[in-house]
Amino acid sequence: MTSKIFRSIFIAVVLVLLVTLVIITGCMSSYFDTVQQNELRDELEIAASATEKLGVPYLEALKSDRYRLTWIAGNGDILYDTDVDSGSMENHTDREEVQEAVKTGSGSSYRYSSTLTEKTLYEAVKLSDGSVLRISVSHATTLLLVAGMLQPIIIIFVLAVVLSMILATRMAKNIVKPFNHLDLEHPMENDTYEELSPLLNRIHSQHKQIDKQIRQLQWKKDEFNQIIEQMEEGLVLLDDNGTILSINPAAKEIFKTGAFCVGQDFLTVDRSSELSQAMDRVNENGHEELRISRSGREYQVNISRITTEDHISGSVLLAFDVTEQASAERSRQEFTANVSHELKTPLQSIIGSAELIENGIMKPEDIPRFAGNIRKESGRLVNLIDDIIRLSQLDEGGSMPMENVNLADLTDEVFSVLRSSADIQNITMTASGSAELFGVKRLLFEMLYNLCDNAIKYNKPDGRVDVAISSTDKNVTISVSDTGVGIPDDHQSRVFERFYRVDKSHSKQSGGTGLGLSIVKHVVQYHHGTIKLESRENSGTTITAVFPIEK
Image (cartoon, rainbow, N blue to C red; front, side, top):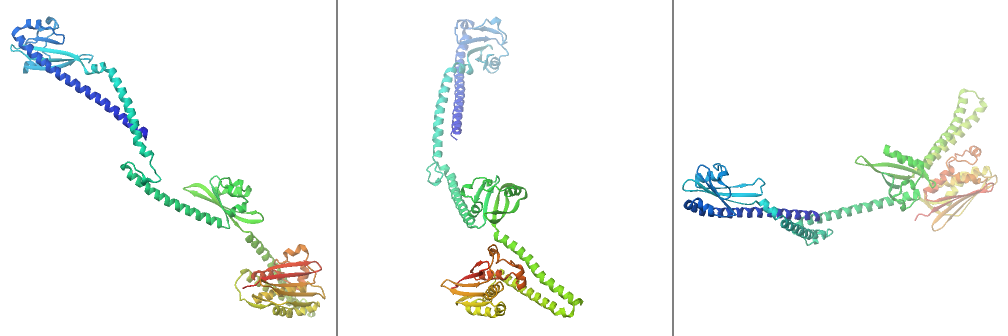
């Protein structure tokens, strides 16, 4: 801006200087021409009077280095000239000043030399005898005068230019100085040109608007950071080159990295080929999904392309922990396969026996045995369906009527139901302790029944089944112990799975469905309790359930 102001002032000064020089030179030249022309006229009047009285002798007597007198006859011939022999001069009828003098009594004109360096002024007057007396004088033209004064003009011009540069520089700095010291952060506090007030007001308004927008953006940024930091899902924002722009704590935990990864390529955080290939494909497809395993957990990863005005500006990676979901899917698949198998086995036995009876193939004395088989398999099928329904109800987690349940009385009810089964193997059942638990009586009965039923089925002849009940201020404990065959160590972690059997042949003989302990586990979980199994092969098993006391 300073240079522009300097150039403007400097050019203006130079132009003014040049124009002034031209005007002054022109005015002075015009002034001196007028003065000299008046002098010529005065000299001509004197000479004309003397010439009419004295004639040629007067003209011959005149000696002047400045003026030239020429006496011209009425026909244009030269009668006498003070500088040149009249006989050698041409006729002057065509001269402008002569023609004008003949017509009006006086005339004037001027002519330049061929080089334009000399200007000649002519004044003519008509004498009484019809002749014309002309006086002329020559002097240098303005161009020659300027050329003659060229050196001082150049000196003056250079001095004027230097002075104008100094003044223009100082003036430009003085003009720009208030601009350089403007406080744009506080525009209304500036003491400067009044003409800048609209600009400063506009800047002040823009500052207020920008501050408001910055506060809004900061609030949105803080809100966004709060949201992503509280997310259980991993979130990673990437630019179009795959550089990490933002990563939330969940993603840091998943990919085992820290805040230092921001600004780095995502491949430095996770180098798996499957994830790298998915990120390459997302630029073409716009969206990719895959599952990855990290630290024993399974994650669903969704990668989506971010497009701004038809330009890929980056991508967002979202990772969901689907370990439980994947486990549930596998469990459902296993459960479906097991249910199909378990339902199919008794149905095939029922259908086979029914076909033999229907076709009359068997002997009459064998019919009761096959009918008993049909009844047995049907009962097994009903028990299986009941257990499946019970598990479905527990999986749904719906609310059931709860009450204070006396566990000692509940144990007596279970013992009365299982007494006949225990007597067959001469199993002794004992119960000790007493406590009340706020829960679903039907589910607690199912739990105790299954625990005691398994303790009887997998016990040894003349064995024992002991139920111990105890309570504290915080929880209630139910423990069921037996003196049976026990559970091998490699099976103990899976006995609570659905349809899992340690001894499949014994389970079929006893009519077990393989769902008893799974129901027990779900009942305990429904009441927010925990379950623990302790067993040694051929030494018996103890299963302990601990329930928190509901206040």
